[in-house]
Image 1 (cartoon, rainbow, N blue to C red):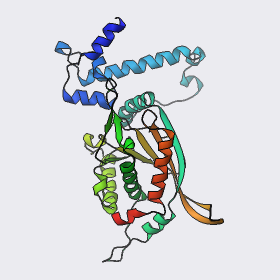
Image 2: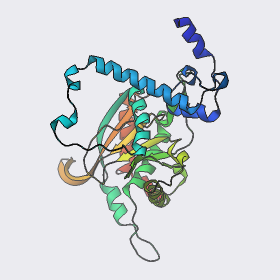
Image 3: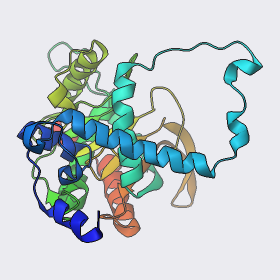
Image 4: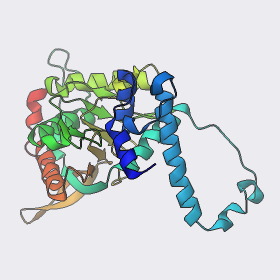
Length: 313
């Protein structure tokens, strides 16, 4: 097929249901490139999946042709006992999205530290005014609220890139923050819908409810899509900085490490402060390094001494 004919095919819209078109967009695929297996060339979800598989196979073949063939001369069992297990279904489903995100989006990651001393102290003093019992709120709820404030100030971070043939930005007017939940079956990313309208206490309760639904595999599939930006946290496990992969079709993701007490020089004197490591990965097609640095600075203000989130309890 000539280049002219290929371009002509790209300009002719494929026949497909709205559900199939939505699935293709979520996977970052131009549906007009997919050959339909149904009557009249109609495209179904399996056609999109096969198209993605063929692309992944092509990448694998290229890598294999460039690799040293000696790697194929031995099998793992040649060196000792092994065990073969099925990959969990959730991880299999996620792998397609991850590969698409990593190969489609030019990732860049900015690392920084946030002084959350005041936030942590404030969180530890919260009590029920009637019973006097301590109110336990996860730090993640505060981070979500602070993130929403930064998304309002930097709308490019709350966007997506339209279909490849259009190449336009979709600026979202809603604030649905995704949160990566660690489950026995793999990571799942439900959304806190309209986080801008919710109090921190409500967000904290909703986080627990969504986490339970994910761990029990009872979460509605739709709740895993339609996000503004995602937060992934290793704070409960350990570690500091890392490079989180953007949750396509979003354009940024915030990685949270484990907070630590550190000696920080403030006004010529060392003070013990609680420092939170953050890792911001972003799509360099839309966001540049300067804008990412400003976003991080704004987020630091929202979580730091400027703790205006107190009003959102």
